[in-house]
Amino acid sequence: MLVCAGMPEIPPFEKVLWGVSFFLNAGLIALLVYRKYSRVFPFFFLYVFLNFLEAIVLFGTYQAWGFFSRKGMQIAWSAQGLVSLARAVAVAENCYLVLAKFRGIWQLAWRLLAAAAVLVAVYTWASARGSWQFAILNLDRGLELVIATVIVLLFVFVRYYEVDVQPRIRTLATGFFLYSAFRVLDDTILEPWRTYGPLWNVLGTLTFLATQLLWIWALGQKQEQTAPGPELLSEDDYRSWSPSINARLKKLNERLRRFWDGSDFH
Image (cartoon, rainbow, N blue to C red; front, side, top):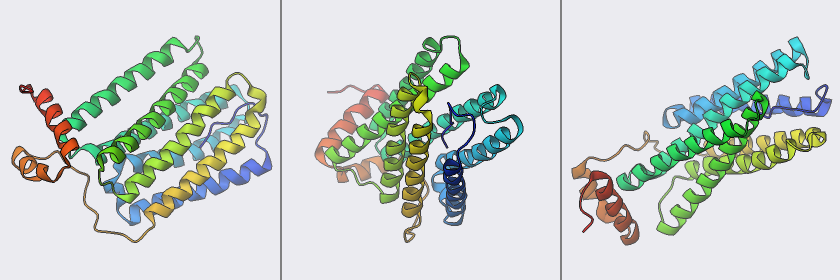
């Protein structure tokens, strides 16, 4: 749910979009619980649930203090920052579900994700200009840029090494990418040209609606045998499973695994 800015009140058309998004979000939560995907994607479920709560908080806030009040904006931007962090964790969960079976590669991936989080925090602090609004805006933009980049790199890795990825995980990642790519563009334009806020609010809401529909469609497909999220394999299991990895991926994974384990490369 986008935090709206630059408008004294919510236009009727945007109220309709907000209403549709709210009910789609509620439907997505119900679908996750009914299909027991909340156990498979716990952090994705947390993100969707927080997004649902954000909509309730924003509605109550704007009703109590007005759409353009200082108090309303503080609550709205704070809620947006929390939801953005939850989205970043949900994307990290997606990466884990794809890479966790590759012990060496996952150890590299989570370190890179942690380093990216630190860089975003430093960027947010350095560019805040003493304003909490700028801090949340830059946090949001930095996280969304990292999310979009991580998903692109994940897709390139999966394609190059021919890694088998569950269709639902691929679709969830695609939805995150589409939304994050728009948010980067939205935040970049919203900061210097706030007069375009109404247009970008509507476009952002439409983008989120499309993302919700994509996720609902993916999770609503015929349910396959759903296993819990992957766990790092034991040494014996890993050695018996590793021959099924293609040669390039096996070589990369072995070298990284030895590196993190402190073994000699040669």
